[in-house]
Amino acid sequence: MAELNVAVVSAERSLWQGTAKSVVAKTPEGEIGILPGHEPVLAMLVEGPLRVEQSDGTKLLVAVHGGFFSVSKDSVNVIAEVAELAEDIDLDRAKTALAAAQAAGAENEAAAIRRAETRINVASVAKGLR
Image (cartoon, rainbow, N blue to C red):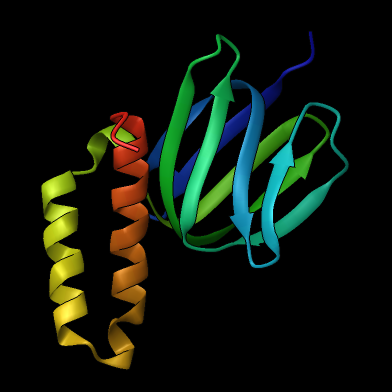
C-alpha cells in the first residue's frame, strides 16, 4: 500500500514526522487533499486545520497559521509560520484570547480572531466537542 512521508514543521520546531494515508490542508483557494501518487504541488497555507490520517488510521490535527506546503512524489512537507498540535492547545486560553480580540474590535484584531477561532476549532474537534 502506498504511503505519504509527511513532515510538519513551524518556525519554532518540528511538530510531527511520519507516514500517512492522506493530508488535507487549507489554501487561499480552499481545501486540498493529498493522497499517495499526487502530482507535485507548492501552495500557500492560510489559517485553518491541517488534517493528517496516519498510516495506522489515527488522525492528527494541527492548527496552522500561515506558511506553505509542498508535495513531491510521495513526500509532503508542511512549513508553517506558526503551528500547534491539537493536544497542545489550551482550549480555555484560546477562548479567552478570542473574547479579548473580539472585544477589541479593531481591524488589526482580525488576525488574532482567526488564530483563536482556528485553535478552538482544532482543539474542539480533537476532543470530540464538535
